[in-house]
Length: 217
Image 1: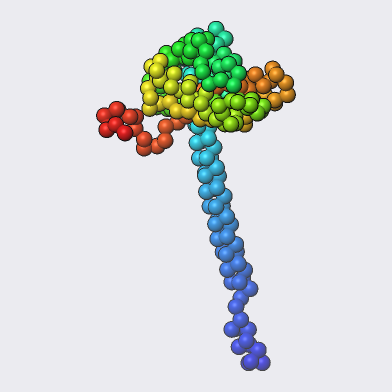
Image 2: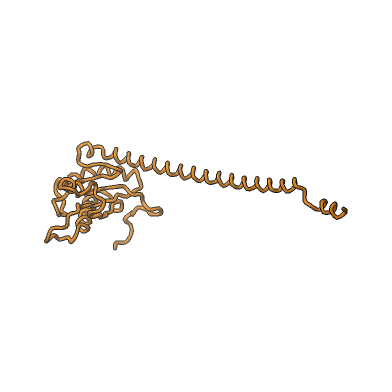
């Protein structure tokens, strides 16, 4: 009998065990709550940053569209998704990289609004050349559409610089037959895909404009 009474006195009361379990459960719930709040704050911050980014891009697009109001009204260029589009038929003859007179006039009409835009925004202009999907004609100086699109982009870039755009704010890119504006299904669609586009590109962090004071290469 004494043995049983001693055993009862040594055993932990059930309410104490229950209390410890409840304390542990509350601690776990608090940790979960803190984690959920942290995740929500992180998501809210990411959403706010994404909204701010979209608003900035939209403001840039609107500013560029406003600057291009005159050439857009005259139908000299198109403006879609923040990219200025110029028909390749206006700029170049088929399979040629030599600017036509009408092409020079179109580029000249873009210089003033682009200069205005660059003055107000610390960005670069990317001039991209595109072709259709047809192979080069036999005897053409270029082996493929990559070469033709690259030279056309360079021709437009250099012409824009000669007309007054700063050399350190414009660069060329070539896409060849890739990224067509419309599927290449007939002569009309291929004519749409032979084009040059001008788009704005943010300047890389830490870069500074070229002041022209460095040594010549």
